[in-house]
Image (cartoon, rainbow, N blue to C red; front, side, top):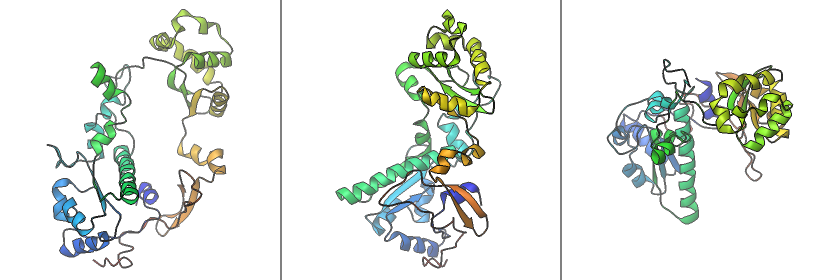
Length: 327
């Protein structure tokens, strides 16, 4: 039972159903009869066999919203392809632009840590599902079937890669370098800080903060394009300054000067973060197998419907009997 499972499934009840059997499908259909939303990630070619194809669930409950998450969507030549999280990370083009930087041609493309492709698909599914529920409840729209392709969801956040290719014919590369600077992770005395300072007024405020060094007036640093072209010269000069200060000094000093600086936090840093602690962001809950653990809490606070942590993630099949699914 992973930490991600414990976090994502808190406040939920859990049942185990064998959808390969008639009894399992009947139990599921019983649950769907008065449900608002079904989110599932069964491959399109298997949905009918599992009894969760749109025609079946819509006939059971015309008001039901079904959100089908798949690797390549419900239609098209790849619809029935099997795959994993790493499949979507590569098929979307994400790994193609991630991982090496200038001088790293001998390194392979990299997948982001964890299950980010699937996680981002889940976030897109949440937004689309809530929109469909609102349309149903506020405008009387019928139940809808949402077709969410993980490949397409990931493609939407490849920064400017798709736009550059569509409008400029340029192909983004993980071997390239930024065309404007400063825009980089930089070492501090006690960690790493993210520095983004590409507007001229931001640059002038940073230089004033550093102490107006003589090198700041060199012609090779005259604008953000030139600063990118000579980043190999500028980077060590800036690092000499960042290495003498803590992450907190650089972050809070950047805030005071309206500079887009941010700490690159570890999990331990986040747990110790004073702002998150004062806001009561983290919550502690006990689990019968995992024990007492601290979890991220509500991402926002609502006055009329305040969030609360009611129960830990369920054990497998824990609520079968409670929900009348004794199969």
